[in-house]
Amino acid sequence: MLSWPNRYRQLRDQCKAKPICEFYQCAIDNPAMPIGEVPLVALDFETTGLNYLNNDIVSVGLVPFNTQRIRYRNSQQWLVNPRQMLAEDSIVIHGITHSEVNQAPDFSEIITPLLSALSGKVIVVHFAAIERHFLYHALKERLNEGIEFAVIDTMELEKRALKARQGLIGRVLNSKLDSVRLADTRSRYGLPAYNNHNALTDALATAELLQAQLAYHYRPDTPLSDLWI
Image (cartoon, rainbow, N blue to C red):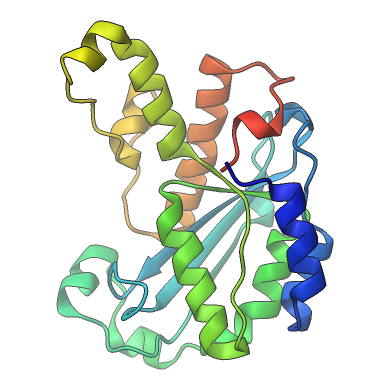
């Protein structure tokens, strides 16, 4: 497993782009920090497609929170103009139209406020590959430098919980796990149904889900190293 304290030290020494360097300088790198004391921020992207090499970010939503409180007043959302044409099937999913993105700024204009909002917090996502890969490549294209960061992935935590519930016999029989989609996972904790595929709503949904997962499966003094990947 990757040692984030070591990796962040390496990244601080290597980075060149100012917004990325400032992000690394503020990164939480103490694996023993109790989750109850960790400042968190839920992050979600809507994109032109699922292939980070050929697609781009359309909107960003983030919600700061901790294990006890969601700070929705401090949430932020940006609509950006992607460098790839919006596909019709992606418009159906997220509802963002050509005319809306044509009037929006390029992602380069939100880099500084976005990384500032993420700095000093542990990022929380539902399915880490999307936010990690898309943010890395969006920055690489515009700053000639990508970014790496630890995350708490609510999808991964749910897989762990389902496997624990499944037990040894279920694993031996290779029983199929229940769905770990965001809406399906929330329903298992009695959380309300939201409309999917809005970046800010999905970020809020992810924040609420992590709070529920922590309340059900973990203690407030659980070390960060047990949760982040």
